[in-house]
Image: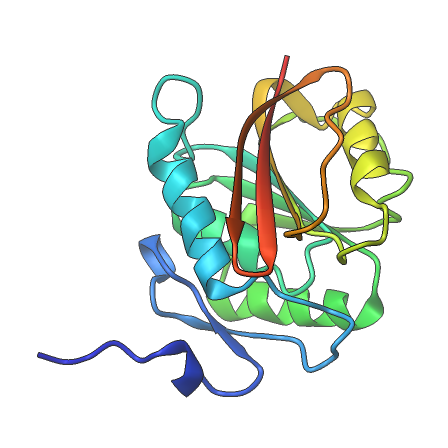
Amino acid sequence: MKRQQSPSKIGAGQLRLLGGLWRGRMIAAPADRDIRPTAQRTRESLFNRLMHAFAPQSFTLAGAHVVDVCAGSGALGLEALSRGAVHVTFIEQAPVALDLLHRNIVALGAEDRTRILRADVRSLPRSSHPCDLALIDPPYGTGLVAPILTGLATQNWLRCGALVTVETGADEEVAVPPGYALIDRRVTGRAAVTVLQTD
């Protein structure tokens, strides 16, 4: 029986997509320490919940429109595409991350199902198409979660009943603003993932 390659055996500067169409495919990860990809264990736990815990009553990833905020390498949004989402908008500002994100999208041949938006997440532009899922993964301890949630709610990024996942450090609390309800929070190692749903 062939053993799966452990995370420690993955090449430096690489991340593995974990499920769906591109399961096992490697994408480029940042060498810059200022860009912190979601850990594999956290990503796997999050998508297991998105695929099973909330479906089909209130959410399904199949056919979903997704926005990935503070996208970095794009690992979260590309995982969503791999598992059935139809379109992802990636929001990022850092030039290094934007270059990495573009290369990963091209490597997977996903240009026709994605859009990269260079924007300051503290002041999101208005969206013409509300999404079913928002994936938020800002740098820990920067205070960006509150303005991102406000921007998503006020700038037409989320449909009624959309899910929003927020990754923070395990010791950070997410204040739930008006218009959102807390439905789940899990700690995995040094990270916590909070799941909210729009009213």
